[in-house]
Length: 105
Ligand SMILES: [Zn+2]
Image (cartoon, rainbow, N blue to C red; front, side, top):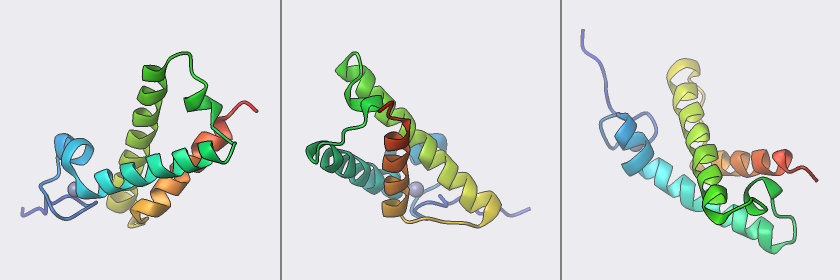
């Protein structure tokens, strides 16, 4: 049975965990967008306490990476199983909204 093993996010590489989380163009562009939007929110005086008021900077960075990875995996599965797709900007915006909703204030 022939299968298409190209990445459903960028169609530019062979799908693997390593590709999706490390070298995928969609993931990289979305990550930069996510960080830019988070920084913009921080500058406007509404930082997410989930990630910015953490007990250490490395934990804050780890939380950002985990949140973004979860959103990438969710997007990958939405495309594969539900034929639903978001742009990297829409996905980054959703991740930022998630961070804001998780803020305890
Ligand atoms: Zn890819």
